Image (tube, rainbow, N blue to C red; front, side, top):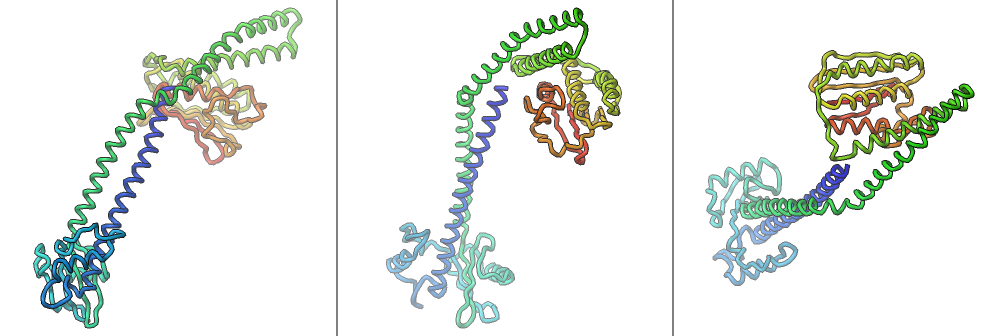
Length: 417
């Protein structure tokens, strides 16, 4: 149980850590892409504001100092463009003048060499078909602006921005993965210390149960012996019968507590032996036939023959007894109990019984220790340990057990091995 608790602690912590890292990584990349996109849009706006050229006269470009001063007066990334005065000379773009019918008049491609005029025409046609004022086409960012005598289309090379975004993404993935593995290793290393108080408390609880069980066995034996002597001496009556029943209940409680404690021992191993599971289910089920008749419950059996498996046969017989005992106790009056064993992809055994109050049961708590469906503890004499033992048996054999509500009329326990 301590190993399971430790694994669960590591798993929960790892999932929480993974969630935090994923949120941080996503936030960083989204912010970076947003700012990169904003930067490209800003450059497009500057080009459009300057009439499609990075100059203010028809004689040539602005002198380097004037142009650099002009560019750095624009806000990028929420401030100056990182102090980079070379941006005006490294920006690669082309400008296409269009008439009012969006037909190409002129192409200015002196600031870009990666694409030819024919490719620019092809891109222009694709952009116009999109019917969007701005967006992406391959690695190019574009913006369409309306002017007095037509339209101006600016196509800006955004490949460097995309490469930068991809570089940030891959770097963040790498750093996040390495950081996650390092922190996960540290968590695994110190997890034993983290659950140490719980482990110590659990060990004390197990020791208390073991000691209490041994202490109770002697007085229970004496009580049973004395009640037998009283019965022989004075004959049987309701008082003596009551003493014997309560002593038997206490014995069952003590035995079940000891069984659970032993099953929780991580060092305890199972001796796997092949046995006929069909016979085990049939024999155990038939032992309950008389009890079912006595309680006016109909028992239905559907068991495939010659199904064999490896495991502890005595534990599986106990498992079947627990499920059948539970079915008899909680089956409706004149109700039906169905026992089924089939071998499909896995060995599947199920015990189903009619129970009209199934919708009121907290199904997820049925395997908790000392949990009782009958909160007043008046319907039967159980202590709520049987299903906890059933769960422990299945866990030890690496199987699965689940409980299901069938149409609000029946409850079914299914074991898959």
